[in-house]
Structures are given as C-alpha cells and as structure tokens.
Length: 155
Image 1 (spheres, rainbow, N blue to C red):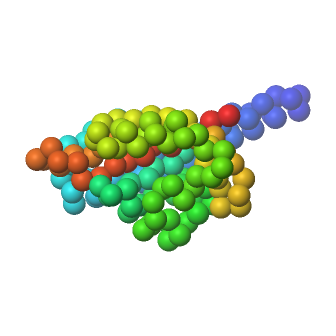
Image 2: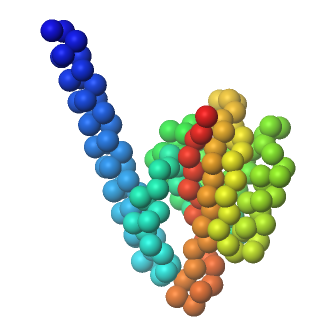
C-alpha cells in the first residue's frame, strides 16, 4: 500500500519540475521579447525557448556578454553581475577543445549558426561538458547586432 503512495509522489514531483521549467521558459521568453523589441531582431523567439536548454547568453557583436538568464547562474555559479561585460571565454580552461572553440569562432566570424560541445568551468573550478548553439541575431536591415548562445549541460 505504501508503494502506491510513493509512486504518487514521483508523479507530483515530476509535475512540479515541469511547471517550474515552464515558468523559467516563460520568464526567458519575456526577457527576450523585450530585447527583441529594443533591437528589432527578425527572430522566432518561441522556437528558441522551445529548445531544451539550461542557459541563455546574449552577447553583442563584439562577443561581450550583455544578458544571461537565471539558468546561466545555476549552471556556472556566476551571477549576471559577474558575467555581464565579460567575454564568454572566461568560462574556458585547460580542457577546453581548441577545435570546438574554432568551430564556434568561425560561425561567429561568418555570422551564421554554429554548434559545438566543449568543456567549460564553473566558478568553483569544476569542469562540465556543455553543448553550445550560437545564433546570430539580425535586425530589420539584416545586420547582425548580437549573438545568442543556447547552452545545455551534457553528460
């Protein structure tokens, strides 16, 4: 009989986790919509937040961080205040693949989508494997003004 009730807790726990994730995604969507209006990007925001991600990082054209979502702090340990104004390379370290970095840099330089999986480092110094997809954000004149990194920790 106890097993039946414990199974119910699993269902409730999963439901609460899903509700919390939807709330986080809604908050990210609201933040991105405000930035989208400010910069007039031609961007399908629903497509972005429908992806499975842990962190979002917005950089300007020169790859200086302008905004991170709450998931970025949970994943890296760095707050928005510690991250804004820095370049994302501050998360890299000795185990970060040069090939993966080159793949991302080439995509940024060519202003096209880029994807790579690499080792980054948390604030505490621990390494973690992260899949990063970078999207160039273009304004109405089709000029790239920003880049959005969609990041997912992988095992």
